Length: 471
Image 1 (cartoon, rainbow, N blue to C red):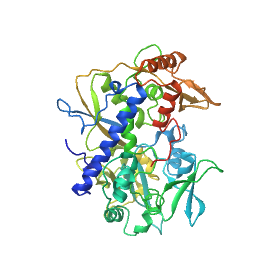
Image 2: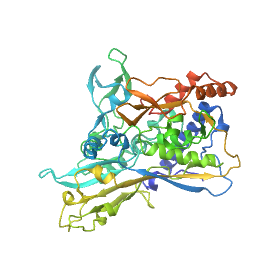
Image 3: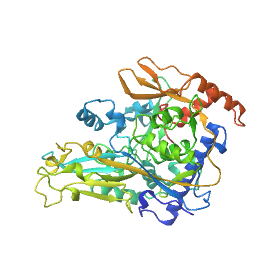
């Protein structure tokens, strides 16, 4: 293998830009291997590899990893109220609140507070309902699983990712605008897609103003990707970089306080801080990757690296009198079954509209109803490189459950107390486990104090902290 392909194998890029994209994804893989190795005591503990750097001795065995498309973090906060969960999933949220900052548009030295919005649909699937402006009736529901990084690359090339350390390759803004007009609508203007001022932020009201994006940089939260349309994912957790990070971190086996392997999805995510324990995606991905490693295999992500819409359950969707509406589902972006974008819309000859469609017996009113019967997937790959399974390491984090809703979890450092209104869950997070972690770190060539190790892990996992704003 000499090049990593574009997500979904889309044929957007010329050879030079394809090489630039490949170099970017390869750099992310290298960075995640290095960072994970630094957190767990050395590279011998990590069984994730970059297929461009390491040729496996034989063919790669593929593994499909799947989960539900509706955002579970929203669902668990509305127990017994699916309609409330669907409404909440359609409400935009503040990016500043997510990161714990306030954003400002800076023009001529003056800073004006602004709000950047994202969708709370965080299972690597987001949707938009297009409506008739006169009647308000639904015209189509669009779904995407396409990460923002690819679109930032289209706009600004490798310069959009200065920390990757890859050779410079220009973007293609003409192509970016063409794709927006094809996928969202001909009304999209080029100037709508870019910040028209410098964008800065403060972490405290009296704190310094720090640059986030320069004037002219691509704006992933532009109106045609939020309130008025959908081109790609907006949720901060819905990223290709996060997919690579999670897969690398999950390639390290873990053990509980009694030394037994941690294999249960919820416990594993809490034990190692592998993403968000409330999601469907992160625990599923982590457990499947970890299972392969415990079998003595090394793992990677199958090329092309991406998150994909796999299927819509036709049996759950019908017309008002049981009519077959499977033909209303149309993949529109992605190749060879790797769906990045799909639409659900009536054909011109349809005798009824979207409002008359039934999903599990209920009239279709929100995109979330279809997301509830959709499946998302990524594709891992594994190879026997003759290393065997590494020795499991102890937990360095744990979970707390909300007192009023035990299905809602939050990650904390291994020795941290659960905050008020929360209680400890899962037995892996114990003082004994913490002592094991400290002892292992002391014997490591990369020994650090436990506090530093926890801090490193917090920076690596978005669910443990409000992450620093991405470069």
